[in-house]
Length: 151
Length: 112
Length: 179
Image (cartoon, rainbow over all chains, first blue to last red; front, side, top):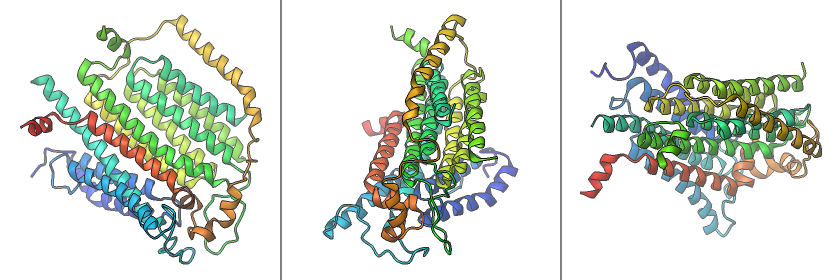
């Protein structure tokens, strides 16, 4: 349908296989951030890279389901609000701001370490949406300045 | 000659790029090199010879570990560098849209 | 080969690669050279027992290269045109070397390589896993002991992305809001 957008058929076919693996690796890094190397920052960056990969391979305005600019804004702000919200929940409970108030669980369990996995998810939302938003804006401005030169 | 002085030399190479280059792309590259040098220096100070990474592994006794505090601070610093690079690139795109060049000296002339 | 030898090799490689990156006339080649510097930093982090940082540095490097190539793509410049004269170049290099020689004695104050001061870190290493429940002590520090610091970092990144959004706001949207 939109064969002229993006790169060649080979790149598109390979992208269909690889992009889910990249995204899955990003989610693994976020969820296991308190057990293995990784965490919210690098997981968010890997997820942003998988979106960038899709956009580069299929071109803009394709069927690929990447967040639009508005959705990226909302996700980014939601990440920051989630981080602050976790802090304020501790404050409401009468504890210091951003204290690790949930149960610690057993060491080396996936669901352990109190609020640390939640904060990792908040940071990952913020970083991935923010970096992808910067990428989207930079690709748009190239097209806009060319249109200004022509017009 | 030790490793601290070598990483400081890397910092000075980046400073040379920022101070003397006329192309904005080269200035952004110089700023990135300065950031690498500072991060590398902080982690060099934190290294303890013969120690392992600061992550506990299941079924193992706790061994001697390197200092985790500078690692945590540098982790945030790298992500901030990414934001700084994005802002610098956005500024460069706006400069190119307004003046039609990336040469700092020509921009200075055009202002007068 | 001990860790120190590899680190000397990597640091000297970084210095040469960054000089190449700054002196290359072709801008695309210099962006790729700075990518080499970043990957060498990632390998150095692995040797220094910091796997978290090596991962972040690796991904950061890829995104930086993508962003810089986008900058080149949206402009028409491919080469650095003007060069400076030989005299001013020699003066600047001599100035840099003089600064290096002048600052070198200050590094003797620092703890020697491989023996850091660990007054605070000892407590994190001993009590961190018990107090926070996280096996990754770096994550325990950034999200539990020093969560305020991370909140500040998130705010800085938020403001940076906000600045990019303000700088690169598209013209059509502005016209629509005026209507």
